[in-house]
Length: 487
Image (cartoon, rainbow, N blue to C red; front, side, top):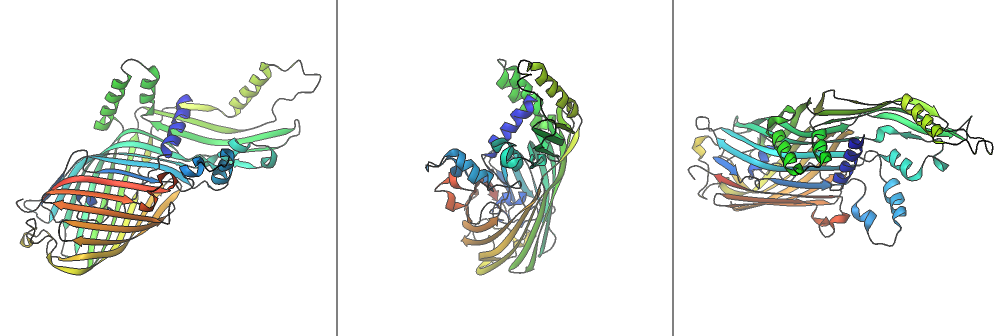
């Protein structure tokens, strides 16, 4: 079980880096080509685009729903044990989580169909890591306070242990089609190549200590717990061997896994944009409707059964000389027999975390002409490339984000305002409310210098003066080359 213990420590460590998945600034920011990745049906105007490899899209985001680093480690004169009790154990619940999601775009290319100019095709590769661990409230209290005193008779819920994580490489291809002047639809197919995956999400059971009959106390445990892993043991074995080629072997295995050498899966994205009027637009998308079939390098652990024990019965002073290791070993053997721990290599299906976006946008402050007219880069309106829309300097609206997690749906509500300064610069400000923060103000900028496109999006700006005391922070940036018409 050493690999399971190390995996748990790894998850808790990664959880402290605090990343999340909502990309509210990027969503419907249609001047940025990467907005196609959060809505394949977003409005498009360019002839083609190509991201600068590796730096076309780098995303780091962070969130903690319960405690911050500053809460525990600030030099405020309060004893650390008191902080743990008052700011962690007394505050955080079993639905609070630590999660980490990072994404790096390797290749991204998009182009308009030569014979079907209303179709915009895009494809690419990106890597993603997603780990979430829920706060195991009852288990943390059991470890910190013990099962005696005020906790005598309390039933500790073993189902509080809930975690999930994966690292994957994604190969994707999408089609964005202008169906009419009012409607644009999009879809994207994804092939997942898994580097590793683990999950322990359907645990149940309890542990309780009461006054005993044959001894002072008796403890009862009922457990049905499982940790499923794929791809983890291969890396663990290499590191455990600790040979002179460890780094080379890890790199080789990682490269093999990202290039279809690991467990494979399939997923779909769908999206749309619809103009209710020339100035009002509604959009929506659903992402990662998919799964991964974990059948290679699988290593699972189970712990199930039920037993009641009153420990070792000793009558003093008669038995003072009879206490020996055999009594302890007999107790351990008895518990192991009632609560068998098992390992297996059974394959399993892991589902991708489904995400849903929706928005409504009102455009105003007409700037004349079409969205990219008279800048040497405009799409020809006669080519059917969706340029016959008036250009508006301002956009105001709201967005909804929902994501399926092991313990239910996480949701966020965003209000935004976007301002365009000519055709070269566009700014977007957001205010988002979710389980992590009620003061999340974000700002994004998109700059177009000829064919060169640069964007940077940052969230929860009020927290940047003290990141350690923040429940949420994010940064996303990238570079692209964009072409219109013959440019």
